Structure formats: structure tokens, C-alpha cells
Image (cartoon, rainbow, N blue to C red):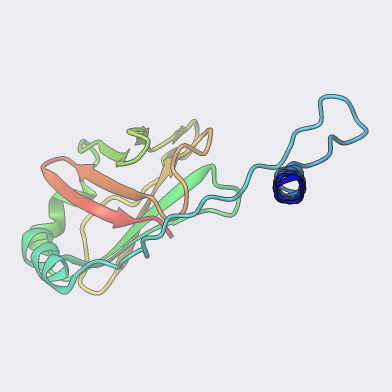
Amino acid sequence: MKLATMAALLACSLWSAAALAQSTQGQQTPSAAPGAARSLPNKSSPYQPVKIPKHAKTFYEAYGGVDKLTVRRTASGNLIRFSYRIVDPARAKALGEKNATPYMLGQRSHALLQIPVMDKIGQLRQTGTPEVGQEYWMVFSNKGNLIKAGDRVNVMIGSFHFDGLLVE
């Protein structure tokens, strides 16, 4: 009886020592500098980003007269460039109008971005009469990096809505 009790106590102590060692392995030792930030584990989404589906490309071509819709962050991340190619200038005419105010809405962050206006240049976008095969662009201010690569955004220009575009 005493032998069985001692064996059980020894097993429990070995088990608790192993559990304690595992729990301290996962913790980082504090750095020498006071107030130094600890690095958090990088959480990534298990979902793979998907390009625009073929039926959506066909819809945007028929609806807005554009194709090759791309949304890319600049190197600094403070600007996001939305570009498109004209397929049908009659349908895409409204995209180049100066009085149509473009907005970009982040689906995750719900941030509403606008095109910055420079004193001498004006809005950072191309306007004018669209030409077939020509690529046009507009740049949105992303101050504070509210929209990140991999996020989905909606671009609204007047009555046009391009939904679910992937930021590259």
C-alpha cells in the first residue's frame, strides 16, 4: 500500500513539473529595457484571398465599362491606389467626372477614405474623357494605415459601386 501511494505521489510530482516547464516555455523573459514591448504571436487568417470572380469581372465590364480593377497600397501604406482600364468609354464617362466624389470604404475597419487634394495639383486622380484601352487611376489617403494589404474594400464613385476589391 505504501509503495503504491509513493508511486502515485512521484507520478503527480513529475506530471506537475512537466506542466510547469511547458507553461514557462511559452512565456518570454522580460527584456532588460523597462517598458519594452513584447512581441505578440502573428495571427493570420486561415482564408486565402481570392481575386475578382469571372462573373464579377463581366458585370463590371457591362455595368461600368471597365476591367482590370486593382487596389494596391503604396510602399509607405499612407496611400492606396485604385486603377482600372476603360473598355467602354460611354459607360465609364461618369468615373472621370470632376464633380463625382470618390470614396473607398474598408469592409473590415469601416474606414471611409477620400482622395487628398493638393494645393497646386488638385485631386490626386485622373479626370477627363475616357479612351478605350487606357488605364486610369486615383489615389486615396490611408493616413493611420486603417486599410491593410489583404483587406476588402468598396470603391464608390458617384452612382458606381465596385464592391469587395482585394487590397494587394
